[in-house]
Length: 310
Image (cartoon, rainbow, N blue to C red; front, top):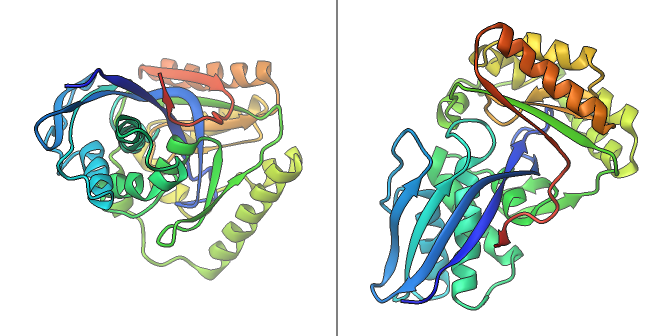
């Protein structure tokens, strides 16, 4: 048995309003920590999962961390290697902050460290994506890629793993509030209509292009005008208690924009001043407090590092 190492993976906000399945950002909030070491018995072995109220499977074929590492070991023709994991969940399941994705991201990085880094961080992406696929049955990387690599990531095509990091201006702050309710990604995806009116596609495409250009050019007005979701948010808003009230409150407090992170229930807002970001978070939380719903808030910037060795 080898000595253990620990990897920490950040939470993520995905979609960023207008970028369904193609935009995601890592934030300075730990979602998962995974401790692991080499063992004599071949394969992946999940010893224990801590920090969750609802039991998660320790079967490596049914856990995102296990699936991700197994696919990596097959690629490296290292199936005889044995790895034992302990997973520490730092956020509740079903928050819309990429909990399952962070497990996959941390897992592949941990396995790579134990094997003396045969792959670059970027070369770990395919295996992390496969791990995330096992969680909700959908192929997307807007949580798992930023959780692994950090930054804001634009995914042009997930099947060919065509993605790029999006520059963002200094002074971009993120306020989030997550009420103590759960929205499972698989269920939130199931309610989405398979067809979208052409007018909405045109408007959403304009918003997506505007947001990326606004971020790249440091144009906060363009960012603000583009942080609108006319396709997915209207279909999911009813799943999140007080969503419209929280969104309106954020806008009144000076947010550049406010929308759902992933499938929710977390709601995020962008702003361009730290003090304003803190005020926005507090006011969003006050909505839930008035409605007797427990919630947590976080204020910060984009996490540029992604998953790291602790």
